[in-house]
Amino acid sequence: MTRFPNLALTLACAALPLAPAHAGFEEALPAETLAYLGVDDVTVLKEGFQASAWGRFLKDQAFQSFQDWLSSEMADLGAQAKEETGTDPFELLKLVEGPAGVFLLDVADPDRTSLDGGEVPVAIGVLLGLGENGDAFLDKFDTLWQAEVDDGNVLLGSEEIAGVEVTLVTDADENADNPMEMRYGVKDGTFVLTMISAALADRAFFESICAGLDGLVEETLDQTDGYAASIAAQGAGTVRGFANVREIVRRAVASAEKEGRMGPDERKLFDSFGFADLGTAALVADVASGGSRTDFELTWSGQGHLAEMLQSVFGPAELVTPRYVPADSVSMTAFRFDLGKGIDAAMRIMRELEPDDAAEAEAMMEMFFEQDGFNVRTDVIDNLAGEVSFFQAKVEDELEALPGTEEDPVSVAILLPMTDGTKLEVAIDTLLRQTGMHATRRRDEFQGVAVFNVPFPLFGSGIHYAITNDLLTLSLSRSMLEDVLRRHGGGDLPTVATSDAWVEATELLDGRAPTSIGFQDAAESVKGMLEALNVLASGEIPGVSVGGAPARRPDRPIPFDVPDPELAYDYFEGTSVSVLRIHESGVRIIMTGP
Image 1 (tube, one colour):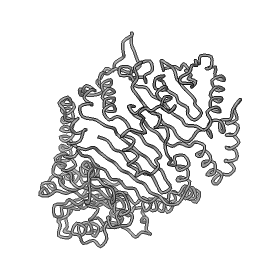
Image 2 (cartoon, helix red, strand yellow):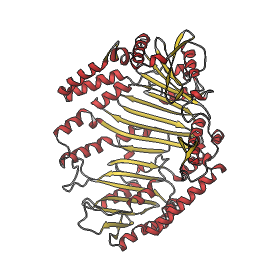
Image 3 (cartoon, one colour):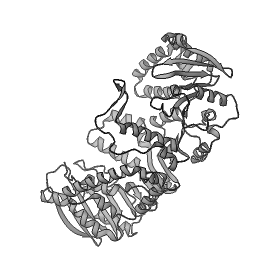
Image 4 (spheres, helix red, strand yellow):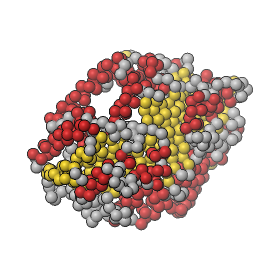
């Protein structure tokens, strides 16, 4: 096994600042780059985060205990690293300014997946903007290897490449399993590091990166078709990432076949699911005083079984349940989920891959579906309209609250649209009678709709449910259920579908149908997090008592004081929004927040 015990520290030093970038090193890297994640300016990143709601929140005086603890931990880690390697990694990070990036570079013929020894022909690289700090950075970085040199584990050499003084780090053990070589130096204020299998090592790879920094590369990553068509190139933001997933997967499969880890049966399964159809993955993100945004996309072509299953179950369509959810809800998530189409797709796949097993599975499902008094498939699964949503809201009665929220009661409701409420009502009634739960079920009405309550362990008020001709609503809170029924009945009341948060969410997809949309009140979300931390900090073990008093841990799980949860209202406002779209060409995820 190769010996680079400080490799994790080396890459951590380079990767920690990764989060805002635009028009950065993607303009210097060659077209053969398989993956890249970069930051345009580390200083801008820091300033953006400090100006954001989270940055200002964590700098509040109420977090002084946390700040002191974090500073102490970082100081201890830095001192330990300096004792072991001669360098404090946090001192290295302070010297980084301007762009930063990590990349994976293809360094072999496209048809050559590995050498006889199994070496994967890729180079790992790091680029860091240092400005005038190049010499100071190198002085500290060089000391990372001194202890290993003294112990005889690695050898250090030097050479000149493209006018750059380069340090060469090699494994001292000539018999090491797949030894690596590392080269690093500073080119015009930019730290350049490449690491590659010693069997493939060639100074030309380091030289090609230097040529890219000089603008001498004929085709760069940002000029490739895949990158240019991705959101990494087209989206607005300060963090950019890109990966040629298709080529990475192709090489991994070819290598597995060559080494005997993938036979004909495994390859058939791989091809049937369409993994070879994966295209590119891209990321663009930003954080600033106005909020944060993260946009991720994975593309594919073709219709393998994986794409077929995802589209069958989660295919995008207009979501209807937000029309029935109160606008002042703490959080809500609505998503497409067509279980019937998913079962059909799974059986089609099984019939193709394992026809004998498929026939047995279908017979077993038919036996399960046919219940006394109703059919699970026709009366329940096919009756559902392919959408599920749930929302949380504040309630007054702590008996209706979710466990753990009794001091500031919050409850939950689930909405399931359907096509025939009568069929589902019969199925539920039959199940309750078969289990004996019908004996304790209570029934009354609200606005002409039957409302049922079934006592249930752990939930003080039991489970309330109501079935209309096209909607099943379940909730721990009677008041939340009634709020849904009022809106479902056509009352002119504020709903999520008419809220600013919903409008913002739908605009993120430019009017295209979503798979899922979710949002949560930003302040309430952070407040809930602080409340949970306060419980942990107290040492109290939820739900456990000793002699009538809450049981407590002997140690202190959180080593700093947690601020008053009400502090969240001073810094956070609006909503955090997330949207998901699974379609015929890929997956898109967008998240926004404070």
